[in-house]
Image 1 (cartoon, rainbow, N blue to C red):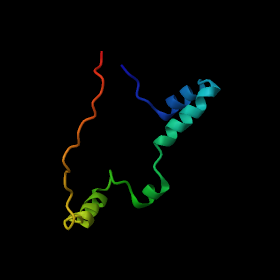
Image 2 (image 1 turned 120 degrees about the horizontal axis):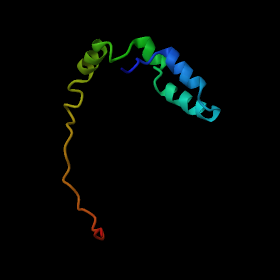
Image 3 (image 1 turned 45 degrees about the horizontal axis):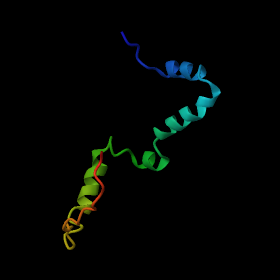
Length: 82
């Protein structure tokens, strides 16, 4: 049976790491932090209202200038792989 990961378990594992790995762990943890600007307005994942408001505000915003797909260009001739 796999034990659930807890903060205490993670802290204990970090304590056993060699000092040269601590910067890497710190950078990894920083990647998961929510920026203060996003915390202030709430996460879009938790508040569907933010997403629907965005759609209402931007829906049809390019109606006067629709996106057009241009014809494909010519492929560059390259030497065959061996």
